[in-house]
Length: 558
Image 1 (cartoon, rainbow, N blue to C red):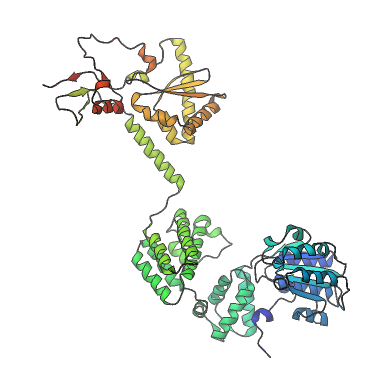
Image 2: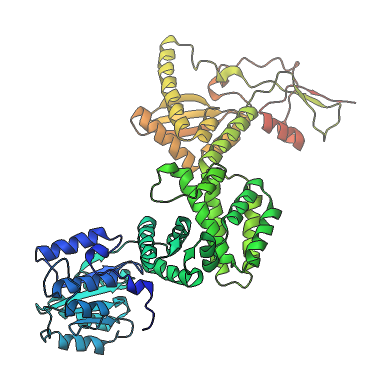
């Protein structure tokens, strides 16, 4: 007798044998028990999770000689024929090879005939998404209103490719990937039944490699049994599956931490020399990065993933979350490019070098805070008043020609008026202005740093006037931008509970507009020489614009 693989020998035969699909099993058993079995079911999910097995079990439950029952006997002739896939009344159709309208037309003609010996005629259409659009349209009427003795069970791995008109006529069950723990239990049971000794680490490696597919894990176990016979070790599993040794993967991460590109490239060379591909190496590195990222975000509370203890112990706190996400981006990009490239090794080595060379990546929020702090320091320094009697000598001018500048007028700090009644009003308005500044500071510090250097002039007819010294024209230009102005007006609107317009002005020669009328009269013309700045040298004009000063006296050399 020919050999039968493990996946077929240990295929579930009853609802109790189905692994990892408890909600679906419970629903179908209750439907059978309460006589609420639908005429059409759609079983959707990834490969190797029990869709076809569930269809056969449901067929046996409906047609068993002792049924309908939720526990088919698997002993009667009907149950045995269904399990073997050759019962005359339970037709398993491959949707990929019977996808045309002619095959569907045959189904429509045959459904009118009663079953030969069973209670129901069951049509199991596997990979139903492969049917053509015309075949689906021809099936709609029969699928919606079949004869009472007909049941349809559709199975697919791509439910999104089925027309909504088909899905709406079926009860849909979505099969999920099977957990690593459930796969380990099933594989351990198979090994005990087969009389094979297997180490727990080996079983765990196989279960992780299957990625949620029980049939995949059974096929791998069958292959390893052919290689190892009576005892299975983790080394044997790694050899058969082509997995990279854990020590080499940990060595790569050690190189990433130490920024040692040379050591990382040596490890990559060893891995590729063993016959592993660049794609396999990147896949395992990405899997480890994912574990580190989830551990960094959730800690040990992430019970949906089983962490590599050695990896977490050594490097669990070695990378920031932003750095790990950047590593995912680097290796994912390399993985996609290695699919079609003939230079796979170069792409892998380039990704490893890039990770070794990168510095710790900070979050965008931290970068924005640092930029705001730098802007604040820049604005604070650039707007400091020039020290009195400070002399500035232009390198383009003779040493004998010197300009003496006066500091910015203190009128910006002075009261707007001497009237006592008006002082109370101004004080209240300044209090409102301070609240507006606080509101802006909480939303955008860079805008607040620029705006606070201005002088609040007044608030009249819904318009706030803010004046900047001549040397702070940059502030006005920046705040006049649409986004900045909109933010300031919105904060002011929230404070004053009304519509507000913002008016920004720049004083001339450092003297506020409010103070021009109260400024002291000029000295006698004999004590001060008139200076026409329009005819000054470019260096002088640039210096005046930078510091907001004005020329008091010019000493001309001989």
